[in-house]
Image 1 (cartoon, rainbow, N blue to C red):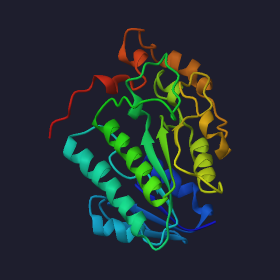
Image 2: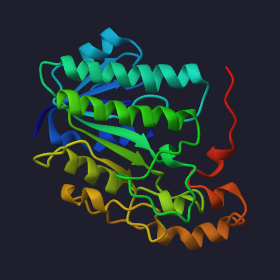
Image 3: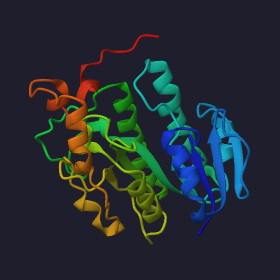
Length: 267
């Protein structure tokens, strides 16, 4: 059991799931967001701060032996917003980890949008596939993976950079039948990341055991994570509710789908 687990972005979609379901892996859960976390539970601490505030982030990280980093900007946006949350914020988090009284192990919520311009006919191995980000958000996650690697090589801080696919109760589109990650499989992955004797600094895809998946995680078999859910059970429902994209449409060509067609967001 960890002594103190920090969950950043604890009021977001995935952070809220982690708050609800990870209380058993640490004596104390420290929750972070800019606002909106409600009252602290029996083993919870609440810390409000912006990830771009270096001093506040370093104080928040100190003493935590585990971090689930779900915080930051989770969608495409203007560069200044992406930079503050996902570039400056990531640097501040790792400086906090480097200077902490306890060296933490980190789960970093990266994204499959780091490789969104790869085609859906290409099977990707995260240990060898070059990044092809589909937007500024994807670029910021490529930066985060590189930063995590440098802090591991230079300071020994272990991180799992998890390229999360599409974590919803059900896949909302045909493309996401391939990228879907169930909440149960995500929680099981986080549990493994904080329980294996040695983590290292792997990059892996957060994806369930979908028949249609594009990604090969065999390079991280040593983690012992075996996703159990399969999006195929939702296919008939999706087919009844919406028309699959044509083969010449971005949602059927690129792994990042329509993200690949976005322009640069203005302020």
